[in-house]
Length: 424
Ligand SMILES: [Ca+2]
Image (tube, rainbow, N blue to C red; front, side, top):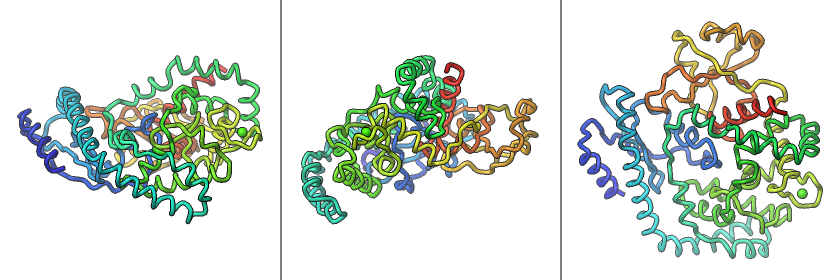
């Protein structure tokens, strides 16, 4: 690892960028916090936020190595953010390529060693699963096909470019094309979707939006073997505890014949079906809606009812607001600006915030609602304006964050929901 660090430092010297300095080798302290849907949505918030207690304003770049270590590259100077942004734009592509090559080498060289270790781990895991009450027959049957998948480790380590701004992110995910596809699905499944809406008291537009953003209406369900993915991440040390638990849950669901092992293909991190449920979510919230004794989350009936049940149980309230875009005045104290999805802090009644909001008459009808203010691009997008874009977010928005801890994911879901409301 140190060799690679030196290579990276030399690379920076080669670029003659004297103002950069490796400041921290940062041990990751957020491993227990799953980021299950990163490749689909919300990568930026979820992956970046854990470091936000550092001053991200000066952070140029960070990179995760295998072993719970992140290198953060900071900029120390009075260089303006605009200038940093320009430098990043110039450097980003090259840096990314170098990093990916280095990661590949690291993974490749350790793959053989990993295979032997993995077999050893697998044998121990089987005993552990049986000791957790899963039948030996199920454990042997399901785990006999489990493989170490280097690709999963690669995905887990990969950090995407973190400066896609909110506008770009939301526009991509709540596009006209998404609306068109969602309407087409609604037309075909109208009877079922209306029925689920009435039964669970969750707006059909919200369910369509969640499905559209999670898997583009079932188009991107993922093709990874979930058992092997979970086994790889359980074997891997970085978030072993979380994924071991998920693997035990999935074995339990198979053992009890609640889900069928033959359909377990999904995302690299083990998320499954039209709404990308993790095993623990399946266990707690999924429903066999058509009562055929099998929970089928790739099929429309069970997946829609399960998603409605999930979002309802975590507290979504029908016909309550999600977010509203606002323009902030310069006088707003910094403490009211949230840019982390972990927790929306300093919430107040909307009427309290009005002194900080331009054209606040427009939100008179929301006076007594409790809201927080988010500025998702602040601290994350180099060169971003501190106060824009800004949004008042309400209780329902926080329920979407429980589904997926990402400020932008929440905005995208509610934006798409609104678009459906204008069409249905
Ligand atoms: Ca079923």
